[in-house]
Image (tube, rainbow, N blue to C red; front, side, top):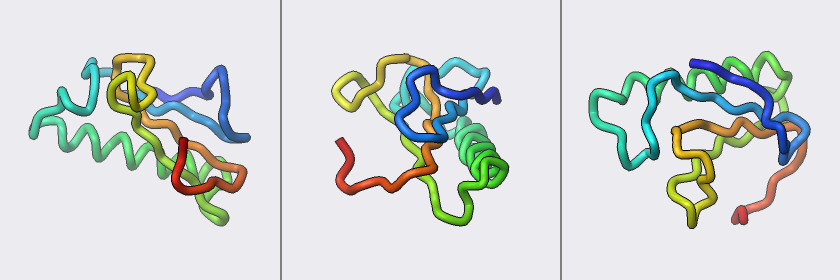
Length: 90
C-alpha cells in the first residue's frame, strides 16, 4: 500500500491510498482481493487518525468508471477531511 497527498486537493486533507497490486476498477476485483480492500480501508483509517480527522470525521471515496469520476484506472481511495461535506455529493 502507498499513500500520498493529492496534487489537486478537494479538501484541506486529501490523501490517496493505493494498493501496489494493479486492479483497474472495483468491478475488476475478485473474492481473493477482499483482504487487500480491507487493508486499503484500514490504512485510510490509520491515516485519518494520524491527520487528526478522527474527532470531526472524514470521507472515503472510490470512483468506479469514468461517469462516476474515475480518471486513473488503478483502484484507490480518496481520504478527505478538514471541512464539512454535503450529501448527496457531486
